[in-house]
Image (cartoon, rainbow, N blue to C red; front, side, top):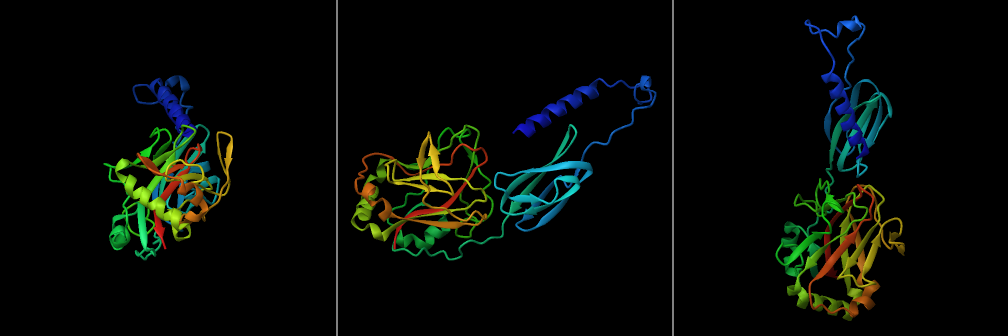
Length: 327
């Protein structure tokens, strides 16, 4: 953000200066300069943009020696050199990046898009006897619909994905590449914005109460048989705080390499996943929160899954294949 603002200011200053440079009738510089001013070459980059697949490279060249920096919310690329007339950009993971070349007051940008050939899990069959989906693509749903006991997926009528203070807490993420089950039907991808906090959730209205009470009753009766599955991918080291079945203490899960601190309260991290840009599975046994679940009774709408990702701008939350299931 600061870089972009600086660039805009510098561009305005340059335009202001150009507007007040006097010329003679031959189009030359002001004769008072007696021809001593030599034209300067504007900074330029080749290429100005690039699209790569993971592990591919591109050499970006400047027409003069520059300082190279790269900005990416997903750590999707790395560069071979930080000084000089060229640098080699290597794609690490699906996402987007901006390569910045700077010299003096000049800056130029090369935008880079990285896609992935990763297929993720290829089997569409979910190993379960009962499934209660929250986020699940249509292809995989159809392949497993005989096992679906209750469908909690977003339909924008009775089930919604809500972002709290949308545009300030989360923005739409990159969302590139295949989903958890290896098809192109998409997944949930969000980027933390600049509000200093973030939050959202999948909200069900009261028409789901009977199915929710049936689910928690089954979990309470046989907690060892039930699990919650979520697919996540990232290349950053952010920690996320997830709540299941409302906001009841004891029904929360912290996923990350460090604990989640919320208004001074520390919530212990219990799960994590490889940060290599590929989809990973997290399995949460319902036996770990059976005491809290056994006390639940739903009489009105509820967030069946909610999430917080902290306040660091650019943090990515990529999730898919979210469902309760019985083995």
